[in-house]
Image (cartoon, rainbow, N blue to C red):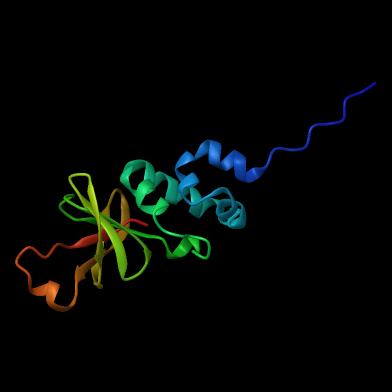
Length: 140
């Protein structure tokens, strides 16, 4: 007797094998947004570059989070990186220590960063007048 054919592999599981960083969002979330596969891969690449973001995502419920609301900013000088899951709240890390912050940014200009044209933002409100106010490049 023949064995029954094996069911086709789950596309969400396959993507999680390629991009294990996405497991921080959960299998059901990945399955729900599988039609935005390219965006999910972009998110995974950034999270691979900044591993602390995986833990930051795990700390927050992401059931209703749309992949295009995930934003990542990097300080122009490279000293800080931030992930925002629901603006204006974000997690930012300097020297590997992540903390929750209120990130309010205003568009400044376009600039080439990592061979792509990216948006550059400056803090708005009182933070804009701080001596150490950084500019941030939106990479995701």
